[in-house]
Amino acid sequence: MLKEERVYAETCAQYLTLTNQGVITRGPLAKIARPLRERQDIDALWEAVAEGLINTLGSDHAPYTPGMKEAPGGNIFDVPFGAPGVETTLPFLYHKGVNQGRITLCRLVQIISERPAEIFGVYHEKGTIQVG
Image (cartoon, rainbow, N blue to C red; front, side):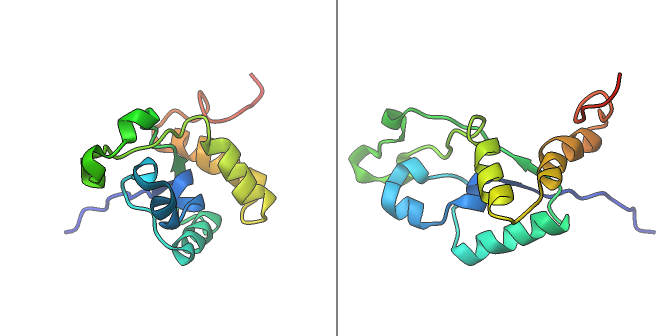
């Protein structure tokens, strides 16, 4: 008999806003893991967020100074993966999602607050504003 498992999907603001053109334009500063993709991938992710196929939105916060992201000898493979995200996630998602009509404000709150709290079993103590 097969055991049923719950599977959750998460994406991050950078995958909903930036294309691989960022790496071409910004070089190592835009080196993140998973690599940035094409515009049609961003559109597909937004559709999955709107439809509820993606459960949460995170930041994958991995900050580095510009100096730490310089490619020694021009070799981008020697540069660490990562970019800051904590301070930019909500403004990016609000602007690109809510302001541009991809998701509602209620959906944004669900995927950045309510759903993560439910998944981690802390809903009612975290993830919502309620009486009491």
